[in-house]
Image 1 (cartoon, rainbow, N blue to C red):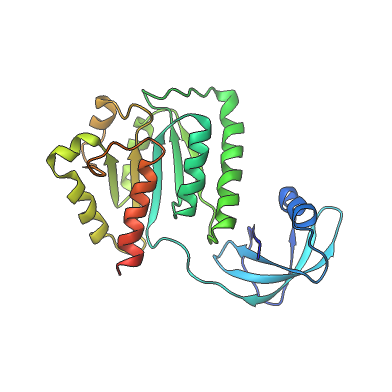
Image 2 (tube, rainbow, N blue to C red; image 1 turned 180 degrees about the horizontal axis):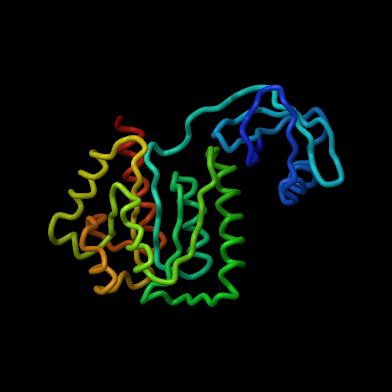
Length: 249
C-alpha cells in the first residue's frame, strides 16, 4: 500500500487533508485511487495509519484514519552523512539509497576536490530536487521520517558544529594501514540508542590532507582494504552499522 507523509501528529479515527500537489497528482493520476480506497499516512510523530479516502477537493484530498499499523523502521542511532559533492546523478543515487538504508540527515559539501561546483543560483533548486528524492525514497522504504538535506560551502563550517554529535567519523583510506577497520567495528559495538553520529566522506579523489587535518578530534577509520567510490562508501558504512545495530542485537 502506497505511503505519504503529513507534517501533523497522528490521531486515529480523525480526518486529515493532503495538500501537497505532487502527492495529490500521484494519488489521483498515477495510483488512480478513488473514494473509499485506502493509503497509508505517516505522521510527524512517527506513526503510520491506514487511511480511507473520503473526498477529492479542488486543492486537497480528505481522508479518515482507520487503523494504526506503526512499526519501528528507523535506525536506533541518528546518522548524518556529510559528503563532498559528486556528479549529479551519482549524488542523487547516493541520497536515494542512503535514505533507504536509514540515514537521517545529509550535508552536501563543496570539497576542495569536488568536480561539481554550485553557485548560489543553483543551490536552492538542487536542494528542492534532493529533498523530493529523499521523500520518495522514504515513502518507498517505509521510513517514519524524511531525512533533511543541507548544503555547506566547505568542511570548516561542519567542524564548527562538531559538538552536536556523540561520534564524528572520517572515512580515510590511509587508516587501512594502521587498523582503522577495527576502529569502525568498535564504534558500532559501542553505539547506544539515540546517539548522534556524523560520518564524513570525500568526493571523487577523496578528502585533501587539509580537510582531514581540520578534524583532529574525529575518529579516522578505514572501510576495508578495497578503494570504494565516493557514492559507494557511505552505503557500505551504513550497511555495516545497520548489521551491528539491528541484526546482531
